[in-house]
Image 1 (cartoon, rainbow, N blue to C red):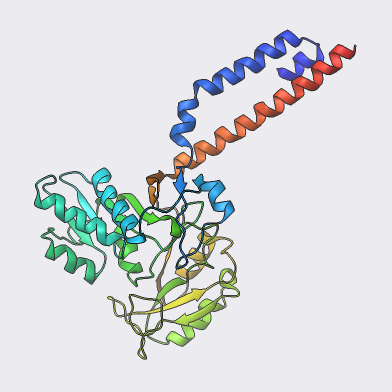
Image 2 (tube, rainbow, N blue to C red):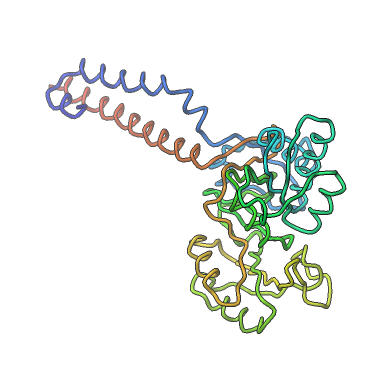
Length: 341
């Protein structure tokens, strides 16, 4: 319609159509606020990976002065996840790790003071089970409760598509078994876990059977999607990918873990996930693709939320704004041409 107006030199109609388009966009400004990626703040630390300029642009990160320690950020996001997503009568999946610890702690507090009632939970590791028992949280298993209302867990890395690397603490199999059964999977992190691409910042754990494990490790390293990785058998404690012992690390399920170290970002995480899962000898892997309901990220400005549908909506709005910007430029050029006539 705009081009037709330009061809017929109708500047009044051009102006009206451009104005109407901008009015429609402004009328949906609440959608921009509701669906744009959440604003985060950068926390500076020499002990964790810094947030890159590309990450700042994608996640809407602002450079704010640090206010809280990393443990305080973890507690903040862990508590908020339970406050916002857990209701009385729910079946809740309890994650494993230093951030999930605080979500479990908060659930125990709210059950103790009566804020929440009639809750049962499914832990994803032996240590989470022990913590929940100490807090008096009623526990069940997938054998009796195959459908969960919500699962809350941390992540070792989160990419712009909200794919995850998990399993640094060695509980990846039980975590995935529980979290895939949840109606909502809430991921809780601090901003150090945000990345441009999975892989280089944190090794990808793969749980494998002890039987002929060296053969399985070679097979994994030879997969097309894993080309260039350094496959390292985890030694010492299964709850850490740092070599801290002489014995092979054993998971809660009696399996081994091989950590895949990448120098470059994984190009296609879903394809890699499929290739790993289809490899005989692999029990499961730490790629969690397409499972995330929302990512809660703690920063100096508080806890912010990013969800897949919000990200897609924001991208659509940005494209529309780019089109309107181009239309305005076209209007200016056409007006100059008309005046010269």
